[in-house]
Amino acid sequence: MKAIIVGLGGRARSWIEVCHRNAEVEIVGYIEPVPEQRQRVADQYNIQSD
View 1: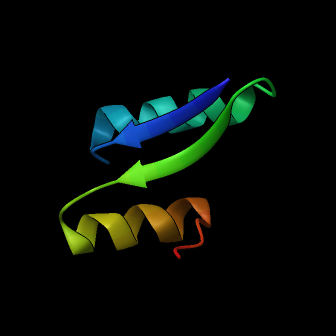
View 2: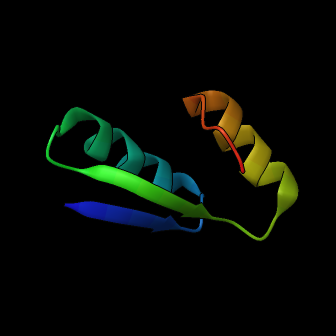
């Protein structure tokens, strides 16, 4: 299953953890309009941006 995480607040970070624990889920995109929040989550989860 492929997933896109929209908004990277507290609830989204919880879903990221759930997805990372499930080998059947691949997160294919992250959407966050606030640059500081986007960078914080990218650093926390080692997410590469394109």
